[in-house]
Length: 149
Image (cartoon, rainbow, N blue to C red; front, side, top):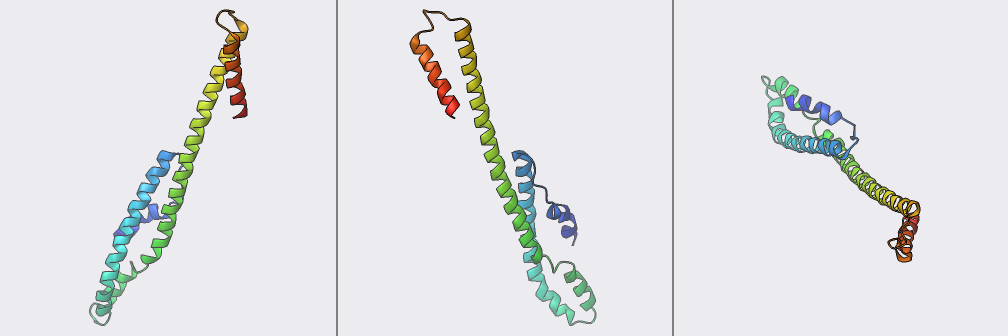
């Protein structure tokens, strides 16, 4: 019963996190609670037959029913926890995909900026011996490729 009360905030949590690090932390917590829940369910499965024997004893029946009554619904919590773990795993993949997309966009933006700076320098300060037709063609090719990407 104590574990059940202590785990309620994590079991009831619905947030997914906004960054890869946040999602990872939430996923680790959810996996830990899910594993602990599995152990609690196993314990209840072991104790239930013992409690059922005590139900027949006048002296212990009421206490046994009260004790099992506080934890007999634990198996029903397994599916929601598994769903939470699955949702967090999906969100982690989404966050990783977003991170990769942001990185690729940042790299492409940096390359475009470098090309623009080089082109501005070439147009603003042409040097006949340095800025050959081949260099201009190569720069143009890079710009055309960036435009198509």
